[in-house]
Image (cartoon, rainbow, N blue to C red; front, side, top):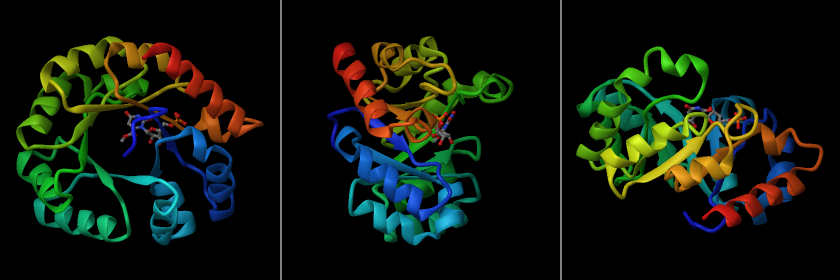
Length: 213
Ligand code: O7M
């Protein structure tokens, strides 16, 4: 995954046509595309393969099962062209390790989630989830742009591993705050794909990133 604009596009649209339109408009301003269930269910899993021809795809299935099932899910995602996958860590180290093995290390583990409810169950165990991600050799963690101070806390636990950070724009977080707190990439969905002009919105974010790193 290139590290240029530091923007990962959360492509949470629900048709192949919309996905293609948005990606064609913003491809010069994003480093990777994150694909989640809404688009996979709407357009079919081949959308992963299709988008992987344009940019690296982070497959956000938020994998959370027993080790054997996790392994099978990751193998399917990687065979469709994903460059990395996202997994939950609360399932325990054997489950996350199964993902890491199947993805050859290319796993991001969810820690404290960005939405208000993320404070309820994920926040109290986020430090442990970050430590688990490190201990099993994951590539990085997902940490909230809505609470940049938590990005800084989690950075201390994981050292030089990567942090990808959702919550910019529609959820109230600021790109510059997340990056200054230690995020490597910001994950942005609605602020780009719901904008009247997605290309201008992505460019404005890329400019903000450039000013803050
Ligand atoms: O910019 P948005 O709010 O439209 O979209 C944010 C994306 O990031 C969306 O795809 C969410 O599923 C995802 N996300 C969060 O918003 N919060 C989290 O805590 C974690 C994720 C995520 O990407 O997990 C991997």
